[in-house]
Image (cartoon, rainbow, N blue to C red):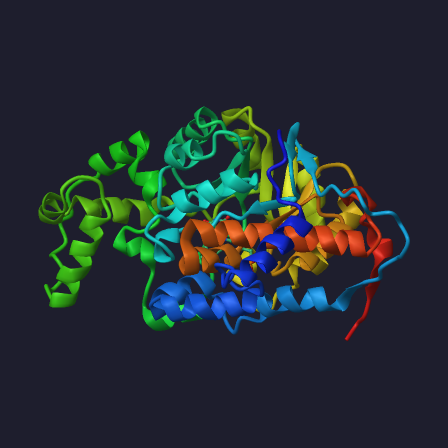
Length: 425
Ligand SMILES: Cc1cc2nc3c(=O)[nH]c(=O)nc-3n(C[C@H](O)[C@H](O)[C@H](O)COP(=O)(O)O)c2cc1C
């Protein structure tokens, strides 16, 4: 694949020359400033859904602080005039080691949601993990990315028939691999969402994969009519029902009248998570698809070993950005623990807490093959749509390239633990 990543010096030149013409970049280059802009732009429930995490947010904090403990120890005079941040995975070539994490309900950030993100990915060559909770069906998202690989992230629901249908849609859409998220068999204790009493799925948001699926549609049709008395009608309830109806395909009025949206949402809530899953269940998943299987949400080194024993093709070391358990180990420390077990047996991808190109450098040095960008791209989407996401990825790529070169490495294989110093506090 032709490299689409812009060289760091070209990006710097473009930005500084733009300054001479009075132009400013579409987003600030520091993610903390970008986050503040996104907060100003979105309603509190929407921003908090995208930004929030579990409990007192300690895991989210740990994720980001862990990067401060690992400090880059640069070396000089290494001829870094020719640089390459490319990598490969499962036979596909990537112009940089970044991927965009699966993030559900992106319509909260921007009306073009996943489509804007996919277009930004296509123009930068950064692969996208398409979420089970996306706001747009997988076929339409993948359709925006004819030359850049996609992954499909699976929430393994209680209906195996639906799982099989999702997997075959992912195969038909040309996805490179299936990413099975293991850490969300129940919804974490997300305090901000609880305080707003707001869960977007109940408004029909983030359900596009389900509503567009023939198996799901049949499951909804098969539901027996509800015998229980309807809830007390209030203005708020009518507004909510109308909003739900407008998020479903077809006429909003018709959806509102028939209450078919309610049936779909009820079905979704009933089946979308499955806390009964165990390691041996992976065998069934293996039989459902020929695509490589990657397990997302691995933190404990024992689980990394089990993943290898289960014969999966890769893992994503991730704690869901601290959205599931409060007070948990940082994902970066989990990466170092898992690296000791995994070695080079299977690829380890990494996410949770990455806020800059230099964070990515550290994750690569500690053994990650690819590094996921999560919340920062949701902020960029909220602030400047497709252009914002594109600028964010270019910034991350440029900073990684410069950090790599300035620390004495010409390519990613030269980045290793010898370039890091650990400071305990
Ligand atoms: C708003 C939001 C929605 C998310 N939705 C999903 C999802 O649908 N599937 C999934 O596997 N992970 C999901 N994640 C987790 C991300 O894939 C990723 O693990 C996390 O964002 C990384 O942490 P960071 O954002 O702090 O870097 C979501 C994260 C956020 C912030």
